[in-house]
Image (cartoon, rainbow, N blue to C red):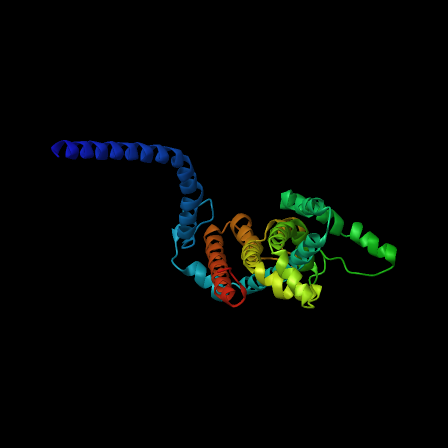
Length: 307
C-alpha cells in the first residue's frame, strides 16, 4: 500500500511538472500578442482617458482640468450637437440602406440557378479596396464639372452638385460608404439564406405562399441572428465614419458633413486640443456602447434563435 501511495505521489508530481512546462510554453507563445495588446490598445485607451481630463496642445505639458472638457462639450461648444446630429443622421440612413440593399441583393443572388459565386465576388470586391482609395475615385466622379455633372448636362437635367450643396453633401458620403461596404453584409446574408431548409420553402409554396410571403415569414426570421449581427457591426462602424468625409468634403460645406470621428481629428490634429479631442472620443465611445446595448435589448423582440 505504501508503494502505491509513493507511485501515486510521483505520478502527481510528474503531472504537475508537465502542467507547469505547458503553462510556461503557452505563456511564451502568448507573450508577443499580450505585449502588442498592452502597448497598442490598453495603454492608449488609458492614456486617452487620462488626457480627457487635461488640457494639452501637444507642445506643452498636459495640465489637469478635471471635467472642464466634458462641461465645455455638453454646455458651451455649439458645434457638438450639430456634429452629433450629423453622425446619427448618417448612421440611421446608412444602416437602413445597407441592410435593405444587402438583403435585396442577397435574396436575388440566392434565387439564381447559376453564376452565384461570380456575383458574390463582384459585389464583395469593393470591400477589399481601402476606403481612402474608394473615396478618391468617387471624389473625381462627384467633383464639380466631373462625371456626374457631365451626365446630367448630357441629359439636359439641372441637378445641384452633391459636394457643394449643404443639404445633399451627406448623401454623397452615404453613397460612397454604401458602395464600398455593402458587399460584407451581402455575403453574410447570402450565406445565411443558403442555409434555410428548402423543405420549409417548399411547404410554404404548397400552402399558397408567394415569393414575398416566403421571404418575410420564413427566410427573414430564420436568418434574423445574422441580420442582427450585421446591424450591430454596421452601426458601430458607421458611427466612426471618417475616411470618406476627410477625402470628399472635409466636414463641409460649412459643417454639414462633420461627424464625431472627423471632429475628433479636427480638434486633436488641426486645433491641437488633444484633451478636448480625447473627451469627444470618450463621448463617442459611450454613445456606441449605449446604442449597442439598446440593440441587444431590442433583439429579444425580433431575433429568433433555434432552440
